[in-house]
Image 1: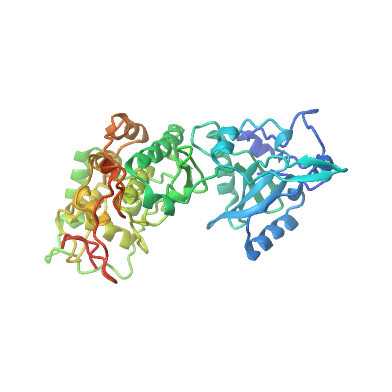
Image 2: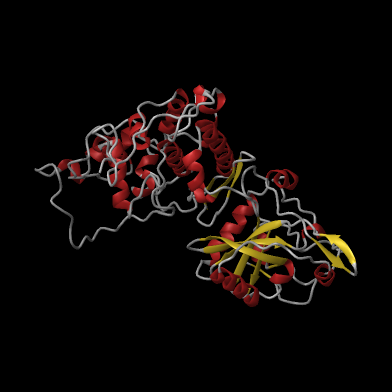
Length: 490
């Protein structure tokens, strides 16, 4: 891993061990060539000005103070502004890069000038320095990702190496540098202003969905070309800026190289005739239960359990992850993209809200039906059984499900086109599921239908072509749609 020693100004530089150096560690801008540094830390501190800070909770302020106290030298390079994210393995802070102008920032692929235009910073202040008024300098922000000490050192190194390999890929957040002090690791990433997805999904029209998905799929195409599985695609890991119509993919803490965790080839990697013969010759096929369903499962099962990577977030895991496929591919990320599109079209977030893998399969089977779920499980050498009476054999079409979910009578032509893309993304068979490249070639992007209306609310009298669609108002505690068969009726 990388490390640095707290020392006087000028020695806060990244040191690399031989093992990390061999893994193509990035050339860090915090270790410039001789003469490249423009000013010392003391000079920078003398020219600092007053800033308008964001409102910060007292607990967050204490957390940032603790980081500055336990990580010597970090306050001389960065001014912590706020906490912008907190997860299972890390916490992310917004910070001002105090020495931005002292280095060549080749990582700045987002166009600071364009961002500055679209996202107006607070009005500049003036203060007196030696009796003269001096304008406040522009703030350049970065994101500091503090990785918890409970994370595996191998996983931390893996994340940093993958980010370095993806450096320069469009719509993928690059790694600027990383520091370590004792058992603490901090990765420095660009800060990208974005809008909360919980606000966006309520207001997005299909044209907005198209820009969002094009940016996300572009990022995934770059990631998958490097044979990297992100494993945790979800709205909070894609920071989208609606003004720029661009986003960046972040958080590669669960990412892996394709094939790096294969324990044994899954049945889904074989030809269909091989899978068929395996199923026919299995004990379950030769000795089917008389009632049609198994009476139960052995209390003390001596058979070894199948081990497979289950990384990801509940509600966004692909079916092959739930079926413990040992040969997972980049297609698991494409399923997650489909869940995001379903959320946007259905106007429900989160769309899937399962507590565990069993609940997730129940949710999935209520959409696809028992017949297709059995076929999908058999592809991975598993048996799918259920005795829930409300789960049908055939399932429902995506068009009908979106109508139920969004409580509308009909879908527009643009929504029908998006629904056809959705069916290719949320395909149970990963071999038939769209790749990122194939999805970008879909008619939804190459030949879009511009027939779009807003969802819900009051009609827009200014433009009859964009009149908001009628929708059913919900009565008190009821969540009933116009169709009695809707699975969301409560």
